[in-house]
Amino acid sequence: MTDRVLIFDTTLRDGEQSPGASMDRDQKLTLAKQLARLRVDVIEAGFPISSPGDFDAVKEIAETVHGPIIAGLARAREADIDAAWRAVQNAGRPRVHTFVGTSDIHVKYQLRKTHEEVLRMAVEAVECAKARCADVEFSPMDATRTDRQYLVDVVTGTIAAGATTVNIPDTVGYATPWEMLDLITFLRENVPGMDGIIISVHCHDDLGLSTANSLAAVRAGARQVECAVNGLGERAGNASLEEIVMALRTRKDSFGVEVGTETAELMRTSRMVSSFSGFLVAPNKAIVGDNAFSHESGIHADGVIKERTTFEIMDPQDVGISESAITLGPRSGRAALKKRLEDLGYPVEEPAKLDSIYERFLALADRKKQVHDEDLATLMQLDGAASAGTYRIESLHVAAGTTQPTASVTLDCDGERLQGSGVGNGPVEAICSAIDAATGLNGTLEDFSVHAVTRGRDAIAQARIRLVMEGREAIGRGADVDTMLASAKAYLNGVNKLIVAERKARVDEL
Ligand code: KIV
Ligand code: ZN
Image (tube, rainbow, N blue to C red; front, top):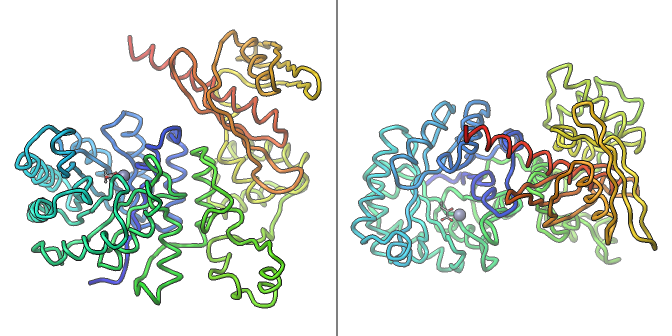
């Protein structure tokens, strides 16, 4: 058995399925490129049949992101498999990942079929995928609650049909680590032909056991782990990629396996996922939380100063935390900005695009004086978010404090100036009312959060809103050194997205 564990990243598929975490096409592409820099082995880029947008995003990733295997997910149906194949076929290394539920509960209640019918569906799905793609992964969904003998039959049948990877999902996060270890051992001992294929696991975190369960499976011989950056995923999420990778690496003495991940990219990837998904990382989150490497207690701090390993089992630099030695400022030129952006994973080739980013960088540098890597990443991640679309903020004035908050705003709409003012219980509500008054639209703010990207008084604030208008929903994002302006940009970003969605729906109806 190989001692290499493949890291299968499903942030763009299972992760993106988390309610409210949806990413747009540019964000998906940027993240896929970052995952390639992180050197994950497989990127599950999406579920191509689920929407034309997802299909296009998977296709674009397959055509432009090089290095990792690019997988597309498909239910055990020909139309799904065909869409997944069409989306990934131009990848350097394409994979079709097909699945069907196999537990009694899924067979009886979800699929409303007999076990024999589901077994046939699984085998035919793999045959259908194999006729198109050499690399086929099969998942018996809810495997950990599936009858063991039936699971052996399904896995045996799908391997005979050509599956090259068999993934054992703990779909509902129900298993314990010792059950996972036992299940993988049982399958290895009872499925003929199992030695020639990769056993994978895909553990959800409903009981907070996803990392432990995945690692127990590795201990039993699993050689692919499906996981997501920051543990993003359905419900409580998936096993967290950074935890899996750093556990396997830090405790190589215990696991005896290798991972190919470029761990110094972990922090950057985590921040990108947090920014794109709007899901903040808890300060005490293992590996990538703000406090994961900070020491508060005097005894700990003293120990680390004398000898880092007294209280640190990992070197912060190994996960990409370093005191950013390089900061840019108002006097930094285009070339310095271009080089730094390249180093951070945001190459800018087009001179016109560089000009526009440089302009926004200078505006930021004028206000902040020192621009850190995190600021630049935010600038790039929200590139165009605040300015793209129908409306753009020209000016904003907010008054708040012990009096009733009020706001007035001037917007630019294709050269026309629109003004509005509003009041609210708080300044954010006042801003939203002012924007509504200027646009004549009426949005409902369902969710609002704001957080500082860097430390210090002049940190960039990143705001995220969930906005609903006439039954449509959008996530808006905005960033600025001024928290109120960041909030206004986020609201307007949401409004602009809803307008685009509305126009698209009208065109589709024609
Ligand atoms: O949780 C799950 O079972 C899945 C499958 C599609 C692998 O996401
Ligand atoms: Zn899942």
